[in-house]
Length: 177
Image (cartoon, rainbow, N blue to C red):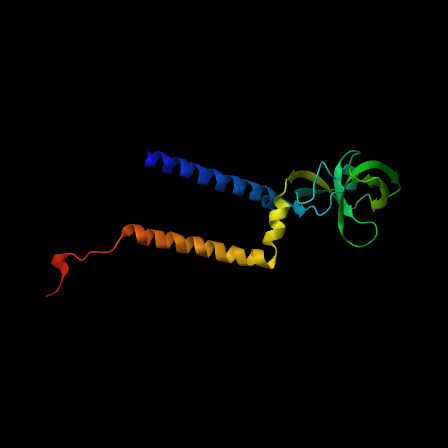
């Protein structure tokens, strides 16, 4: 029975580790392919994308966007922040594309222009709520936790190993007279 419990425990642990790694890799691995992961900080795209989700964005040409796509673009107010909204309309005026975008939860629309040869981002997918963990880990307390928790786990593992091995007994044949 204890062997069965040990096997079940191992399966649960490795399944949990596999799940955590899959979630983390789904957000981090895209960077190797030129994509970008971002934490969503507002609810303007609710329910499609929620606050605290991580989105993976692929850079595209503005001419590659279509009405209905969820895209990222520089805020037209010049602040440099990125906005994630749905494309409502696109019109070409010479070498400029005029976009009308709107967050799914917003009542107002943005109107902005981008050069035809410019860059915007297309949202490939989202990882729900991962951004909440990313924000916590990015805090000073999170950094400390990333150092202390593994150290404590290592210490507990070593102490458990020592405890299980029991006291060392000297071999009577090895005692020097």
